[in-house]
Length: 67
Image (cartoon, rainbow, N blue to C red; front, side, top):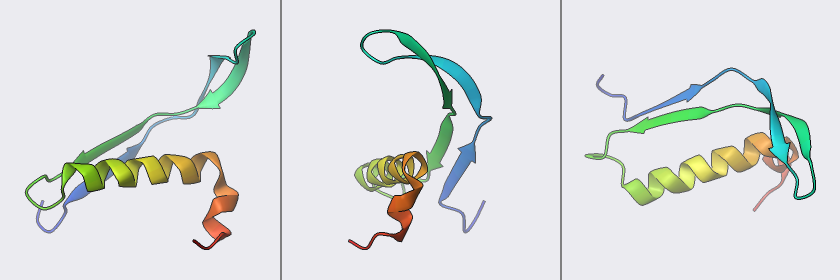
């Protein structure tokens, strides 16, 4: 859909088991779906964007930190 070059889909939050190295513990988790038009956006830049988005969602206080 012109002029869209990226779509980010946020899926449902669910409690899932997470292995912490010693035992399983319940943890809230969700999936992100990202789609990019690679004619406009380089794959590396898309991957950096998704990694940063993941970091901000996992640690929202970083939104207010400069740098």
